[in-house]
Length: 402
Ligand SMILES: [Zn+2]
Image (cartoon, rainbow, N blue to C red; front, side, top):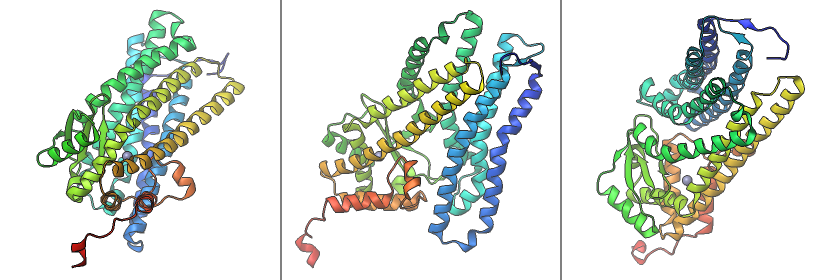
């Protein structure tokens, strides 16, 4: 709120209702888009329909993120000028926590729920709405709730300790760094449980462990995530010292054992080439700097020049991290693809796995120039071309002539 403006009195219930209405808006827009797209579905080829779906989902993801942050900032600015009749400090923090959860959950889950009928039709999903929302809810818990804890913790500390300690940039950065480090240590333990992964059975687990030994990687656990009803075919690696390899059951169902081996070899590449550490460092930088920065911004007087400077800084920061982090990510993907060959795995198995995963996950095979900037992975077409181009197929074995 601006310097010298009057404070306004508002009841907590009225505030939460306004927030809920704002949180429901992106979901309503998503539902309108989904219904319009469902009507024109008959006139599209299946790959055309898949491409439209993917692009629209990405636009909603990005636009929803901007709406989330901008709306949150506007709410904070408004709140700084509000008198809350009949509330003590703990009650106020409680209201803010409920409000933040309504805001974040409403925007993120509302978009997913709005798009659901369209996604279900294009991808032929069996998943119910609840199952479809599960990955987003896990994301909410892992990525968003800690952020909430951080901001509310700061608000509470500042008011109850009556201290300016948390207002100093260096102290804020140290606090934010410590907090992010704690999160990065905890996330690899918590995330596999939240997605209900269970130990992978034999012979698949044994084959993955043998491959990891060949790569010189000590694997802590090999697990499978039950995501076949959501039709998510993917593999990932979490943890630092002794990593945990996870594959989805839908990946196992879609790929041959050789293709699964090639996909896991790519993941082992992310470990051997220290990408896991780079990702943690980038996440650390992003959250610590953005967390400390936004806490600082909230303390500045909200005059137009300050807002313009803050806005410019935020645009730069977001641009750098969205575009820059994705650029680093795409380079790492190509490096991990090259590692597959170093490990002695036939790159043709990875190429065929990538083609199969693009179909299974309803992904477009290529990006145009602008769209590419926002993608964490290069397009399948580019990856396959590099794999095939860099490693010409070996001469056919004699029995192939038979
Ligand atoms: Zn990768």
